[in-house]
Image (cartoon, rainbow, N blue to C red; front, side, top):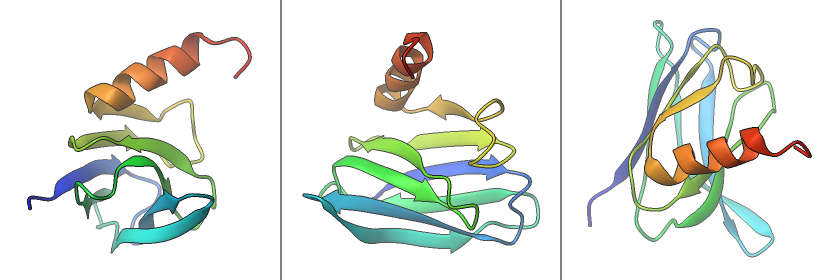
Length: 107
């Protein structure tokens, strides 16, 4: 079984932990965690059995929800709490979801 990855750069979260959690019903479970390197880069992995909605979390405690659909995902920005700079640059399901939520005036 090959692992999928979530990679990215969050340059204000240098040397901080970032975690990926998934949902099992209403409960969450840890999937992966790592320390963001001195350049802001990180890589988390998840397996095909981790599918559905998950989220990334840092010490800021502002989650970024992602769709775990078996594809690689890339996230770039300043931090998870700075939605103005945060971009999903890879991952078809997540790119589509971000475009839809950005065009929805109720979000």
